[in-house]
Image 1 (cartoon, rainbow, N blue to C red):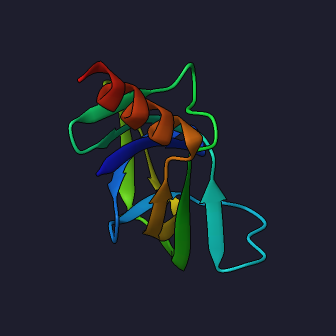
Image 2 (cartoon, rainbow, N blue to C red):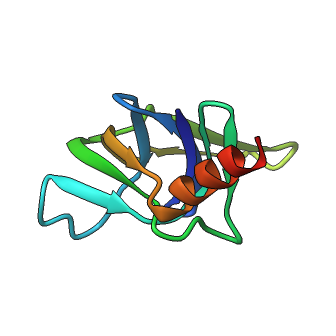
Length: 118
């Protein structure tokens, strides 16, 4: 089973026990996070597509740590002007681990409809 969720403006494909990083999440008061913007999910042979999200579905994540990304260098060179500039940037990141994926009532309904068709 996997799900595609939207968190902090990014879409991430996750499975249970998956570790991933996103741009820093502000104001994290607890070590757990419940993301309710699940866009797509696959469980067994059935697919759930949100409109735009799946109602009642959520992904529970555990906050592992806050870190910084690799340094990116921006170098600007202007020909014939004796002018150069170098700027460095490190993005603040939050590392998360998926604890549980809950698909809610919509997954149960789709499973019942499939059995009724057979």
